[in-house]
Amino acid sequence: MGILMSLAWSLSGVLVGWGVTSLRASMAFARSREQMSHEIRLWQEEAQRYKAVADQVSQEKKAWAEGIKQGREEVISLVPLLLLAQRKDVTP
Image: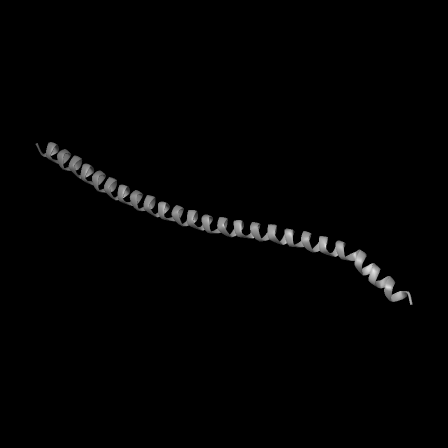
């Protein structure tokens, strides 16, 4: 009878220990999962901010290229007038 009682107490101790350990592990896992979800949301928000910045830079680059093209066309169109004005200054 003493051996059976010892086995019963040992088994119940093992079961209680296993239960407590499982509970703590599941709580730690839930905390880790929540923390990972939080970090994922932060990275997604940061990615959205950088995407917005990249879109803005892309638009600015396009506007800059258009401005350069327009400026180049204006200079090219003015060259004949400048040459004509220079010739008029040279001839008496």
